[in-house]
Image (tube, rainbow, N blue to C red; front, top):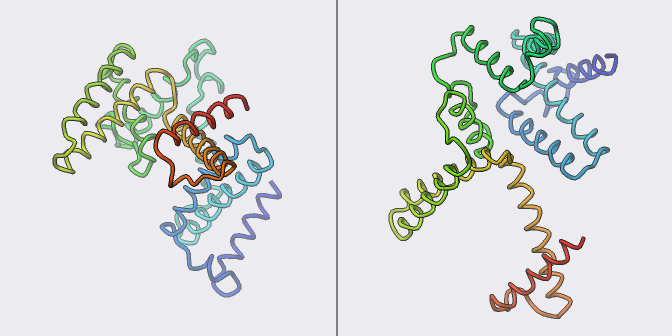
Length: 261
């Protein structure tokens, strides 16, 4: 806790209008929010790479964001870091009744359902209940938000009984995309959006996190594409000048090298 106290003191000094850092003093919630989101992604990236030193560093950067927001809130008379910690403490205890004594241990075989039910009760007590969709932040990345919306709908019975219905929906949406090709751009965009939403739903039925799956697909694509560049460079060939058949052959070679690696 001494380290946290020192961090709080450092942030207060940085935000001091007379003795602080001009950049830190000039910031507000809106200007800092993009940095907060970015730091969350950098934490996820360090985890994906298995970089524990990097993870320690990125978690520190993420903690800085919490401290920064709490300091600005304290200056405005809303709450401070202590209030953030106390709110989190109460939330963790309240949402784990099977751990902290208000329900029997055997009642929590599926903790995710308990967690969501408690969150729903919290929204009701705050007067925020009304729709199963309430509380899903619009600022979430699109894939994450789509999956969250679908999970909310599934909790009230609006769902396919198994993955086969989701597969059929993907095929249906793909047909609708093809039907709109060459037509109005807005209709085409809408159909592509429906297709992506259907793919997210399929991933949910298969217990695949769509955000993680797409991120890893991006890593694989980048690695293989770099392999194509190296492959053609070693052959004295320019990527831009190669026919599609040659590029596909180079892609398959890079893919095989990656699979062996």
